[in-house]
Image (cartoon, rainbow, N blue to C red; front, top):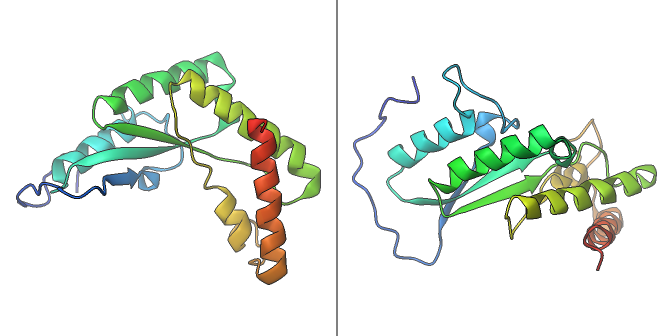
Length: 172
């Protein structure tokens, strides 16, 4: 099925609740800067399809961002262009800061702090007021590189460490 096909004939539904519908576009992959054959951002093409086919208005989209990619001016400029295009379609674009290192390993703590700090700085340059960093879930539940899921005291210790990393990253 091509994304341009309409998959249903559902009537639009007005969302009268305070709960807004948002999407996490990971079904489009984690490379938000990927282009389709026509030169359009794949994320924009995918979001356009979802907006057209969703019976309820989509107001928010999350975009995975790797802060190290944004350090390069080309990466930041491409991301600004992507965000401008997404903001024409939805009310809120929320970057998800992705880590490529295990923040629970003490030897990686400084790198995790620096990566998050850089991501927050770059998010500010994108005009973003809200960020998320969900990549920690994989480290906590054991889905990354064969780690065992954390439970009990180990989980509490890991959550405390991640809290300290975030506090240090924002400079609080």
